[in-house]
Length: 202
Ligand SMILES: Cc1ncc(COP(=O)(O)O)c(C=O)c1O
Image 1 (spheres, helix red, strand yellow):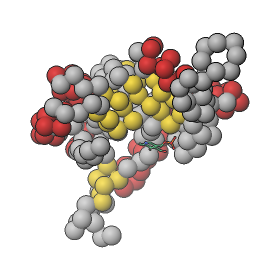
Image 2 (cartoon, protein in one colour):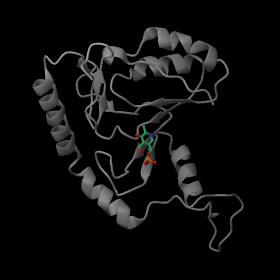
Image 3 (tube, rainbow, N blue to C red):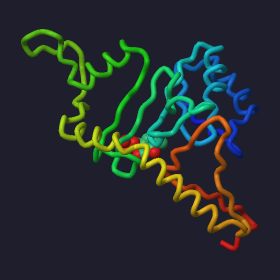
Image 4 (cartoon, helix red, strand yellow):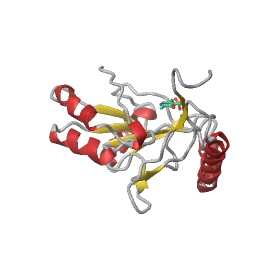
C-alpha cells in the first residue's frame, strides 16, 4: 500500500501530481482517493483509466458535495465505488456506519453478501465463504433516511458558517481559506483554515 499526499492547491488538483502518479499506476491494482474540496475527478479518472486502474473514492466526508459544472453529480459518482461515512461527526449521521455506492450492481451485491455474513442463498444456514457482520440495522437506516431528507439544508447551513468565518476573518494576516473549485460545490462539512507559517501571529 503506497500513500501519496497530493495537493488540491487553491482548488485545483496539481497536474504535476497526476504525472507523478504514472509510476505507481503501472503496478497499482486500485487507486483510493480521498474526496475533498478541489479534487478534480475527471482528471484523476482519465489518468487511472489509461492504466486500467479502478478508482475507489473515500467519500466519508462528502455527503452533499457535488462535482462538475452546472450542479454536477454527487461526489464519488463515476468511480468504480465510493464509500460514505455516517459517523456521528459527519454532515448527516445514522449514529454510526456508512454506505458503499457504485454503478456496478454486481459489486454492490457482492458487498451486501459479504456484509451479511456471506450466507449462501439457500433456505438453510450455510456459509461456504467467510463473511462479516457489517450490516446496518434497520433502526439506524431509518435514522439515516430521516437525515437524508434534510441533507440539502445541512449543506446550506455549513456553507453559511464557512462564509461567516471567511467574512469575519477577512484581512487577518497569515490565514487562508480553502477556495471552492470552479467545477464543484463543497459541502463545507468542516471549515478549514490554513495558517501560514511565519506570517500568522500564532
Ligand atoms: C476521510 C475519512 N475516511 C474515513 C473515515 C472513517 O469513517 P468511519 O468513522 O465511518 O469509519 C472518516 C471519518 O470518520 C474520514 O473523515
